[in-house]
Image (cartoon, rainbow, N blue to C red; front, side, top):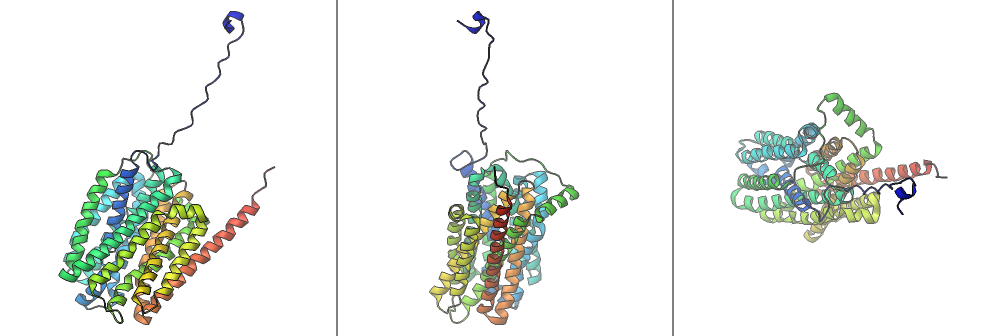
Length: 424
């Protein structure tokens, strides 16, 4: 007999609520492949444009009659422009959207890239490169913020690793292509070819990148931006990650700015095309960046940073030999260690910052590219003063800084763990 028939009260049990479904993108899910490929191409265009003159510095030095330390400003100006403008551009992405800012950044950067081959003087070339770097500033911070918002937390390291892998492919292909093209037709035609390739990448990027679904419009008020930046800089973990990114990039910027001079001089005397092909070792960076998530899973974040630093230092020491195979092996280890460390540190920033992610990523990118500018300039000066061993010394000091900061972070984490109250 029913409860109503017996006079008993009717009790309706509440159905258990269904677990919330995470609508963010994940590997195998809708839109993930399109998103990954789009940002991969954005990464390719960014690094191809940003470092388009790096493998050509000996030719630029020859045309304008300047030393390595002066020609290196064509690289340092671009990375310096990016470092200065990445924070303002990240603020624009909070107001106008990640995809909009990334699209505009690429559009301006590729337009300037088509003007670079016509620079009449070294000064004009440096100015154009600075403008190009400033334009590209809208891409890195907005890209990592986009991923942090649109991708599930478990897939974040892998997704950012794929974006960084695009950086490595762009850096590699740009240098290889410019090396061979410049050998036949000069450095101006070479950078023009890179500009055309970047145009194609920008068009496909805009066509494929999914519309963001989890973006919340932020404020452009300077007071709000200043408070967000202050909060990030007051976080000890974020400060350590920013310093680590800058130091890793100091190594990388110094090594790859100077390596062309070393390989074209005695005892190697390699032609420009072969020197450009040396940058195929960037493929190692593609692999190490895309597998950074698995490395963190095995060793933890700090363990992965120790491994990346140790690998980079070993490569620097091997590169001191006057043996081309050992120099190449050294470059392989430097590249693999750098890209792994960069992917680990940048993804840790995105995970650590729960608010103002674009600003957190922008501060990392600013520190990262300040490191690149410093590495390019200081590495070239050290090479001029003491040869390749001078550049290696700068790199080893930077790696020592990475290890020291990571050790300090490990100790700080242990102290914090001991202070946590034990659950009853």
